[in-house]
Image 1 (cartoon, rainbow, N blue to C red):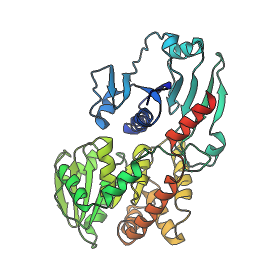
Image 2 (image 1 turned 60 degrees about the horizontal axis):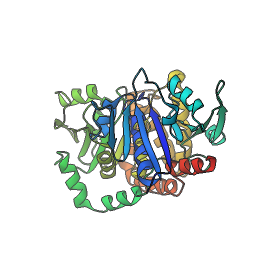
Image 3 (image 1 turned 60 degrees about the vertical axis):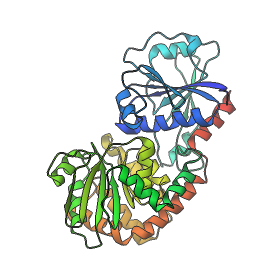
Image 4 (image 1 turned 135 degrees about the vertical axis):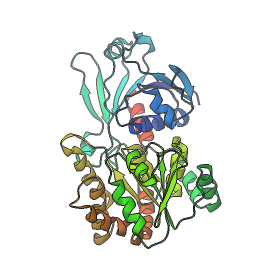
Length: 387
């Protein structure tokens, strides 16, 4: 498909892999599924290389999966207005270089300027999606597009074939086991968990509860570099890929840090997924598996408002007693708990007794979201309406 529009997507990495993860998924989807010539400007190529090994940290410009990937340097080079594309997208409100904005303003036909905002389930997002903001100095207007969970927002990043690829993987047990073997996993367990969280998560409390439970063997898979202090303490050795340790019912194994496609498969293969930030949070929902979100902490506890907003939406169709257990467990995981015992009790319920019901509910929730427009489709529709 011949590109009709050119598009620059700018990404400033703040939350480790979250910003890069969302921007990279969107960039490659736009390049693959839409008539767009896409460039991704990213300030930390090393972060992108971790989730996309084809991207090389020592190359300032490279073509990867149909996307031209460029290093966004601290001192941005002079910009020829003729080189400014038709559409400019700021990832998560990152501030564009001043000389780039000046070139946008002096381009023969000013580009469509879009700010892709952070994901939120808060109600005000519905009213702000598509909002216009004129530039104070130039004849430019920025439009705010919000990913979200309602039909009034831009939806979630979801490739066209994602749900079918997940379905085929999950219905083939041999394929699942072969994938886990590729990661060096050969343990057999009644329940398999993945763990991706920030350092301040109460991982040691979770491990202690899992080790003491009586519901069968539990295998917890942790990508290398995640929760290193707590994982190393459990292992009694550095948390490097291949290291594992068993205590009671729990085996913790460190697996290699993986690219985005393999991380999707890990989520599909596990019975329960602990995720963090924005990218893995969304992918856990597409996995149609029970999950727990460790939200990125913000000043003045603003993140807890977002957490409560999502829980309000996510739990709205769940029986009251089960919803309250999930709510209590999620809040405890995010630091809102009176004691470690409070957390352990909630997790005993969520990880074992409720798991079959949560799995069924996760499938229904994922199907409901998949029935709505995805963010790339929403973005392209907005582009066509404005050009």
